[in-house]
Length: 84
Image (cartoon, rainbow, N blue to C red; front, side, top):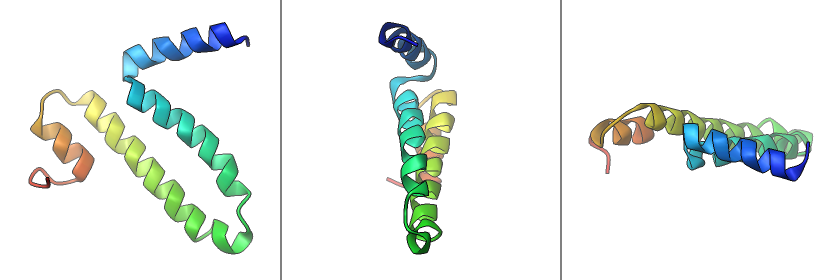
């Protein structure tokens, strides 16, 4: 796949989902192989925490992308409508 096709495909996805969601997906695709190369003692503790946190951010971005308006987005990202 050439770079121009990849860039066009990425731009189309970013228009549909938003640039933050697209970049987070790319970050997760980069992060997963890095975590797999952690030493065994760190892979299952630190690696799991890093990956879980990154996936939580991805879930929050998906919820925020699918939600219209102000307060529901805050609740989706923070887990609480009252959190600042």
